[in-house]
Amino acid sequence: MQIIGQPNQLTALLGIQYPIIQAGMIWASGWKLASAVSNAGGLGIIGAGSMYPDVLREHIRQCKAATLNPFAVNIPLLYPDLDQLIQIIIEEKVPIVFTSAGNPKTYTGLFKSHGIKVVHVVSSSKFALKAQEAGCDAVVAEGFEAGGHNGREETTTLVLIPAVRKKITIPLIAAGGIATGQQMYAAIALGADGVQVGSRFVCTPEASSHIHFKEAVVAAGEGDTQLSLKKLVPVRLLKNEFFQQVADAEKRGADEAELSHLLGRARAKKGMFEGDLKEGELEIGQVAALIHEIKPAADIVAEMIADYNACADRMPKL
Ligand code: NDP
Ligand code: NDP
Image: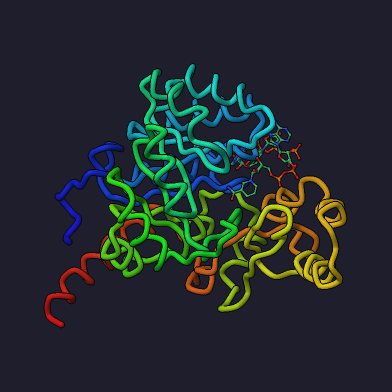
């Protein structure tokens, strides 16, 4: 299972050196993070979910200027001005798009007709098959450990990856709870062709997240994140005052309207971009418990590869 020098179907598809994909994350992954990961041999992704269309165009242009390697844009399909984002992606000739939170049948054909590769994010083997049937080039299967938007069924990465692997033949990227080379080795053993890593890349100088948020992630331990807002859109959050307000409301039996009112607007920006650790929404994965320092994205990629290779050396000796 040695990686270096051995392209697999995923790295060949995306034109990258290592099968490490940096997740598209709202308020964290702009062009600085995406280009740093792409320059380090992985695939960097600009997270468009929190960007107005002109902001996205600017980030794509900056990314192109900062790296000659492939990069991608992630668009949540429930974005309000989706058609504008899609137009920009086509005009700017972005090579790869990651779609999430929506039906892959709607736009995959359009992207592919413009020569753009499409990867769809799913949380079940049923949706993975749907993505393959829609013509997607690859699938990200994201388990319950993941930060931010999460599947309703709470399937963990350890169960999800083998289940999806049985259903699809296109390349499979494992996500949710992966931040180290050891975890990457395990995901590949389960049947994945590569991994998508989110939380680990939040704690980099290149991520646009507020420093208070990065420091809170470094300080987080086991049990400090939990799935929340299941009645609205299930989302894994770092526990803080806002999380507690939601938990109390849910305990009282608050309905969707009350939870929606409590959430209000732009909570995610307040927490992750403006650094309000009390009142903001802080989206991060369980794996925050294993993140102990802020360091450059390139160092994270290099460390993951070194740890993966150490695992590959050790396993046959066991
Ligand atoms: P700036 O444009 O000065 O950006 C502040 C920091 O965030 C800089 O490091 C900047 O990088 C980086 N950054 C800017 N846009 C994004 C982005 N979309 N995603 C990730 N990182 C980003 O801040 P302003 O407050 O002047 O913001 C200008 C506009 O951009 C506003 O509409 C704001 O809401 C929006 N914005 C959106 C973000 C998002 O993630 N959706 C994040 C930041 C701003 P650099 O200086 O290299 O451009
Ligand atoms: P809200 O409705 O609470 O707020 C909208 C936020 O998005 C504001 O901060 C706003 O910036 C920014 N924004 C960027 N572009 C637009 C636009 N065209 N119209 C309106 N607002 C825009 O949404 P959330 O913050 O909860 O979520 C924003 C997006 O991120 C959604 O598309 C959502 O699906 C996605 N998301 C993805 C997650 C993931 O895990 N992939 C997790 C959570 C959300 P400003 O304040 O500067 O106006």
